[in-house]
Image (cartoon, rainbow, N blue to C red; front, side, top):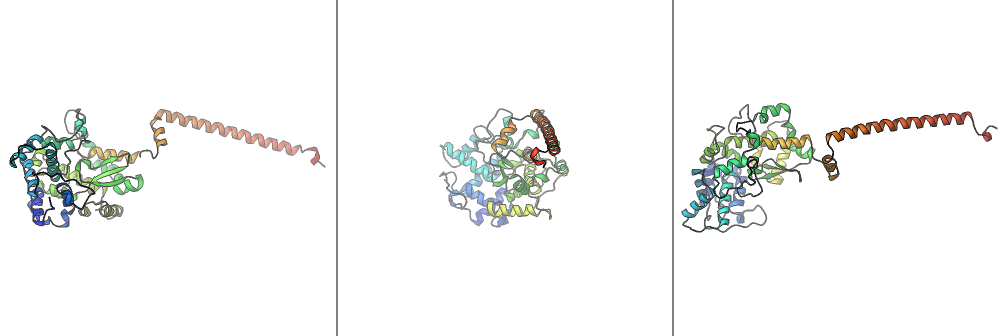
Length: 386
């Protein structure tokens, strides 16, 4: 499939982000999003990436086919993976669709609409892990809205009884404690050696790999603003099902993501925070961050009691690393693993005792040397008396 023309871009933006944004489809505003779109839908024609393999399927021959798949999801948020594949095949007049084609259809559609890779085999949300499920993937009889909601649901946002428990993650409390200031992107890079890299998968946002000390950041700012504009007149607590019906993710999730980017990692609105602006410009120039990230627009008002229900656990994990950086080498790591607080206290006491002991011995030796020197002075050898 070839890259979309200007008129096709307008239709795509109109369907996915709203008619009022269609006029910006061919401008720099959506340049980063269409780079990502082309890398998914028509990778062979994309200028980004190295080697690509484009699955040849009759089900996706034009960009209108992608939008047709998107409309099926918007109209039926509770559609299962199997039902989705069957619906597409039936509309195309096909009876036999291979498993690879089904997965390709689902991955392309969900990633274009919601910036989520629904075919990842290595991801599981804490919400599902707690229930004995070890993979977050859209498959079989799992309905789409359950997959999307479960993928973002965290233990931190739900107590044992199912009641909301987000006080710990409220933004004002974090700001007052100085926690948010300590995890600015430039501080993570300069002080803790953390590498920041962009990701187009929203599920990877704020994911820190401690082995490589790499923090992934979802950088598609225009995508987030476009989604937020589709629900700007709705409640911030709009459910996942109602949001998907509108062709969007929940506004609370989108607003949180924008806040973590522009209010925590890159607070460029502050005229004193030049270091954040310099680093952001570097990320745009060298690491393909969305250039629209240089402009701040939250689309809708930010509540005073805004809480991080979705990204709170990852922010906490990042803050923990800042408070207690991981060991820099294997030897230090070994000592940290094999040294408890009690042992550390014992070692400190023993060290203090030995220091006092050796100090006392040094004093005694010095005193004896002084006495011997005085005796030698008072009693010089026979040969030196003449």
